[in-house]
Image 1 (spheres, rainbow, N blue to C red):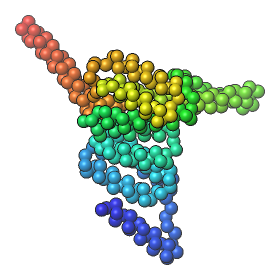
Image 2 (cartoon, one colour; image 1 turned 45 degrees about the vertical axis):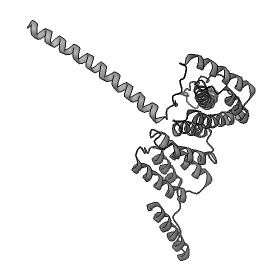
Image 3 (tube, one colour; image 1 turned 135 degrees about the horizontal axis):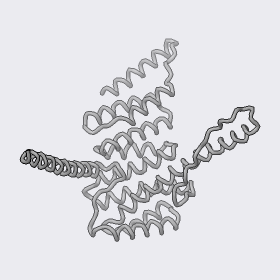
Image 4 (cartoon, one colour; image 1 turned 90 degrees about the vertical axis):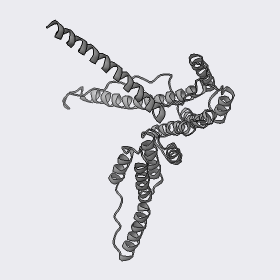
Length: 300
């Protein structure tokens, strides 16, 4: 309701301003950037904070109406919900899907495919085969997009080390060293981009392998999905080999929901395990200290 009132008031203000000859205050790039940072740092783990975040975003979507701005707002909402223990996988899927229609940044697009795929798993945690299919479609779409645009190395390249040009400008060697420094900067930037893309490829691949290494067997389905995604035959063989290798290492019947970092249940379970281990270590240390203190007391 608050968001609707804000929209109506803003529309009325614009109409009155236009009618009276007053200029409408423009939306600045800095204001947009601040809004994006604020959304991405938001965490919505309960119904109240989720509703607040969604309502605030409606006003932002009204104010920032350029397609690229709209896509970045939806990505930011997808990111915020994904980093909030995936309490609302439906919102991650909704905003992620909308973001992908106009998001230009390649790295953010790959993250979005992972967010949406992980959310599909969580949304259907009681129906693993169905969740697996939808999640794999998202991962494969990202992988297909990435590999059709880039021919990536097997491993990430080493990042070149930059250096300073500390020669005075009147030194005859200054220009040559400055060119070398600029070339090193460009090589460093290029290597970082490739390393980032390799990381996204490996994450997407891992997610697919993890899904199809578990039972029930989904070899035929994976082959069909790979064909639908129009992936190269080399990648199809590589995925199948990795699935077979991973399946051999897993206990029979393993089909727990897994995620790169966004699955709420996996993360909560991990925290519980960590707390238990810490508690056991603490109790053991406390018992040791107490025993030594008693021994010293008896000895004294």
